[in-house]
Amino acid sequence: MKSKRTLFLLMFVIGLCFAMVLGPLCSAQHAVVSIKNVSVQLVETRPPVGNKVIRVYNIIAVLQNSGDVKSDEISVFFYDPEYNKTTTPPIKLTPFNVSLNPDENKTFILNNWPTPLTGDVLINVSFKPSLSDVLKTQDNSGSYVYHLQIGATRKTTSTPGFEVAVVLFAILALLVKKQIKK
Image (tube, rainbow, N blue to C red; front, side, top):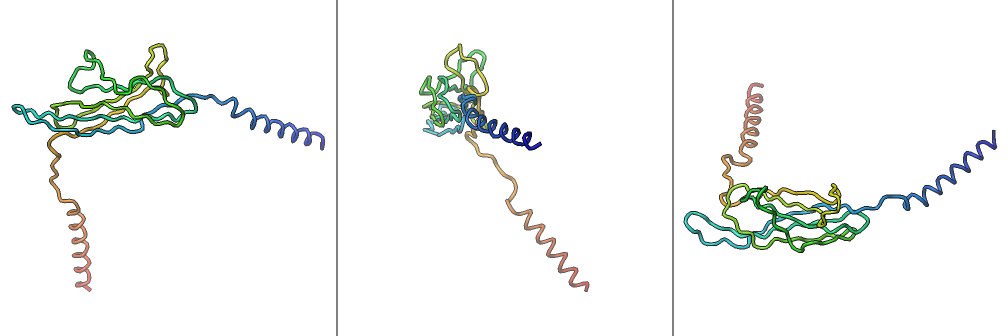
């Protein structure tokens, strides 16, 4: 009985040692690229021509490689919301084909995007491998939709906190009424 327990403990310790030594060596290494942030900056507002105002924006996308190896070459694209996606090719952000090292952030920029659009505009930024022979996966491709409010600001019809004040006043009135009845 004692020899079975000793043999079990010996095999357990040897297995644990193998797992500790071979575990990190056998783990799959790959690059995991994702969009960390997308921002839009207004560069200028051009004088109106007729009833159209042209605004010029810079679109900035920050990609991050959270994997443990260098990524394949990645390209970042912007789909102009003014044009049809099926007939108009996307605009490539600079720098063009770039690999990201492990734990590296890289900034991609589209300078001077002019648009006459107003209201809520959807800015679609996506990335994928630059080479066509690299298989697209969720680790090396993706997209992000940024909501840009252009022009008229949204109008609010209520006063913030007014409802809270009314409820507090009603509770206070009930308490005073209750005290008067006593």
